[in-house]
Image (cartoon, rainbow, N blue to C red; front, side):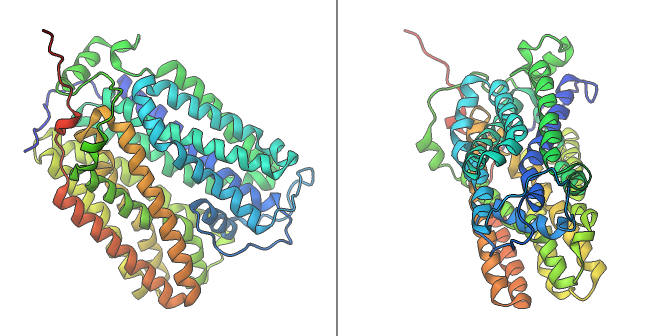
Length: 478
């Protein structure tokens, strides 16, 4: 059985670790807005006479499909902004490049973060992404090849930033507060998606599309200043932390190793079923989430016959629900742990089950309520909202089973998620191109089946105790 964490209380919301969570929330907010900025701006950047091509296989390729539907009401914007003759195929390459950049750095950056320090890895990734965002309008004038290169490097930088976070939480998050702290930080991505969907089109219409990059690139630079000033890799070296908080964090993590390790036990990881349970959870979770993110406006357009171009707020409501459920789920998970109501593995499996089962039920119900506008909208909002309950389940489970390798394993986990997103978006495009009504039904049924597979696998093999290969063994001197 996994041991329950100690229930000794420490300082809570007025503490340095919660300030770190808020800064990381801001960082995630910044990165997602920078990632989506081009998807919105390209509507005004390309020649309006060029039509969108077929749906491509990449996740980023679908972002342009999604955001074109909801933002193409922006007519001719600032005439001083350039208009580029980029074909749909060229646009597909541009949008695919950031996904491949992220995949390239997910695993190596997670490994290096444990050696070089997550503060510098994450901060450098955020800074590079912000500077490249500011440079994007100029790059577009210099040529499409440079834009593709910039997007690829930006994806690599963001891959570094995403995975480095878990190395920090391995040293800063007490076991009773892991769900709470990581959910506060992670909700920044959902909130950023909401904001960019709401204001991106307005900025383009009022100021011109380059200002989308200037504004969110500048926000990223400000975030970098906060990051390098306030964040430290561990509480022992932070000059501003209180003695009480430092002692609380250190004492709560006494059974976890604190030193990095240069060798990674790959063979032991490959044979570890609890790790595969986490990977399958990520694969299932990202399968359905990617479909909702990329096809939400398309589904509302084709099934409910609503003009998404005038419904930006409607399209962004699911992201507010996702952000709220992420934070509330973290609070509830840590409440159950702090009161000793459930063991750690029970909490992880409970929230993983809710995060995979509830959205599956909503997805299966969608084809049968298509005639009801309000019911369909409610279900579409509930899917990403309930799905984000997984953030208190298998999403942070690597911190439980192998805190020393949390960033490295998070990189692998997100790699499984990205692969699932690419496959699911490709499959969805193929199914709905055959027949819209039966296609959507098959899409949701297949998504529910994938979620059930992930749920059963995690429920069977998931654990929350530190694995033997992840423990630090003391050196024996002769």
